[in-house]
Amino acid sequence: MPKFYESSFSYSYPFPAVTLAYFLRYPNPYSTHVLSTDVISRAFDPDAQTLSTTRLHLKRSKLPPAVLKLLPKGLLGGGGATQDGGGQSYILEKSVVDLKEGKMETESRNLEWTGVLSVVERQIYKVPQQQGLLTTKKNGNLAEQIRGETTDVTTIVTFKSRFGQAKLLGNKRRSELPDTLSPDTMSTAQKNETEDESQPKKGFFSSWSTNSLQRTIEAIGVRRTRDALVKSKEGMNVVLERLREGGLKGVLDGMRKDQELVFGAEGPWKRVWQQSRDSDERPTMSNDPFEDD
Image 1 (cartoon, rainbow, N blue to C red):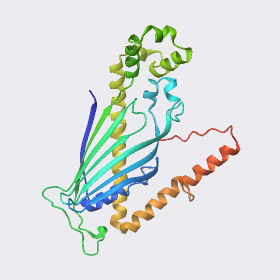
Image 2 (tube, one colour):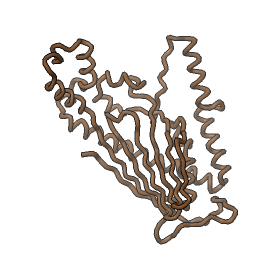
Image 3 (cartoon, rainbow, N blue to C red):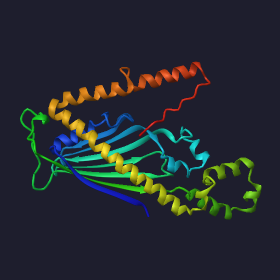
Image 4 (tube, rainbow, N blue to C red):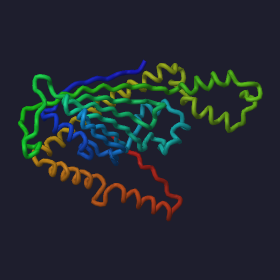
């Protein structure tokens, strides 16, 4: 059974401001691990008054040390990961803003390490029923809307670990192999590959059942997500306050300053390009671009 984490809170800002801040939340001082955000698709339905968006976020990531102890070395060697669990990971985000209902639904999921832990975060932003949807003023400046308006947010995160299932499936498949493809006739490379992908590290954890390992990984994910949601809320509040004090210009100025603080005036991609160019000139250089909170 997967684990779930649920939380509810309210932003002290109107729904139009919160939805705008959601799409402008990166970068902010609490999201220095976010490298880039790209819009894959965006469509507005004039009849239903809904805006549907799909985005892809690239983030620095790092597996917790407690999880690293459970993983085989062969698994860490794939996907550009370092031996300390660092790396870059993609997050797929889908959202639908319903202007008629005053509601926004979002879903975010990791695209990396899904065999170790799949995390799906669903959020619902909505106007409190007793409040009603706030309309913007004629000048369209969200920073001048009435203070005291709030937006409720409900977050539900699902954690599902499939770690160790490859080993169980591999054992089942091997038992079903014909004699010509039995383990006795497999090549040394095939045997090593199977062992690297399926065998956990030896020691205390080797006596645990697959189910216990999965539940442990999921519990670690719950703890990290609980802390991450606090930072996410703080980051949103920074963007909302910039919007209130300086409007859209204030948000964009803040984003520019945050980006320069993390990546320098040249931005992240020129640095990546320069590192790639240097590595071509010096082929022995390695590139380990992972780091995260």
